[in-house]
Every structure is written in C-alpha cells, then in structure tokens.
Image (cartoon, rainbow, N blue to C red):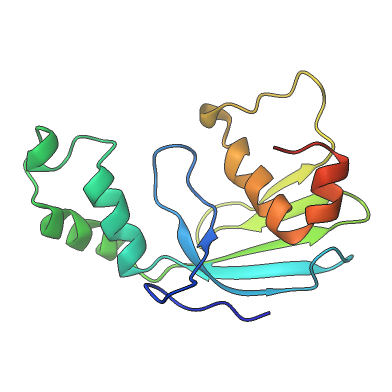
Amino acid sequence: MMIAASGAAGARDFPLASCKSWNATLEHRSGVDSRRATMTGTATEANLAEYCQRDPGGETVQYGGDLTVKACIAKYRQQAGHASYRAVADCTKGSLSFFPPQGDPQTVLFPLAEDADTSCASGMPPLMAQFKLLCPKAAARYHIE
C-alpha cells in the first residue's frame, strides 16, 4: 500500500511524537497483519510546520520565544528535515521494532504488562500507534487503544 507524500490529500502520519514532538509522513506500508509488516516515513516540511505552529516548547514569538514560525521550521529542517524512519512488526508474535535515523532501535513486545508505563514520557504512545497501523487485528486483540 503506497501512501501519499507530505501535504497531499490523504497523507497519513507515521507516529513519532510522544505528546510534544512532530510526526513524520507515512510513505509506504506493506504486509499489514503479517509476520513482516513494515512502514517507512519521512519528516517533511508539513510535519515541521505543524510542530512549529503548535509550539509545545515555547520557542516561537507567539508563545514567548524568539523565533518566528518560519525560523522555527528552518531550525528543525536542519536537524530533522527529510529524516527517514522505519518500523517493522511481526504481528503473529506481537513484536515491533522502530528504527529512527539516529540512535538505537526501540523494540517492544505486545501485549504490554498490566503495569507498563504508557505515559508520554515513556515514549510508548507512538510505538503503540505504529503497532496499530501495522497490526490492526493484533492491536484489537491486545486492546491497544
């Protein structure tokens, strides 16, 4: 299944944000509900613009910071613009691995323990959302909201 690129009608998010940051734009998703479900996404200008307009960090003039929205977008374009992201799931095992452009991959196994931290600070919400996109049947079985 190919997904439209940034800003296009019908574009979907590749969940990255843990309550504050930006998402990426989903570019490709295949193998949904299989042993090798995959999706890729890219941080686009539209993703960064949404983040800067929402400005959860108070960086723009509108929210008490020094940057215009345009300067905020330029700042984050240098950091993350067009970075590629990938997630792979084995829906039969309930596993998900997320591969950011830098840093270590994150792997999670569903169902989560009853006392698992699913707060924004844990980073779990975007991983749960990625699993729901790749393994909707398993996500429903595991009651992932």
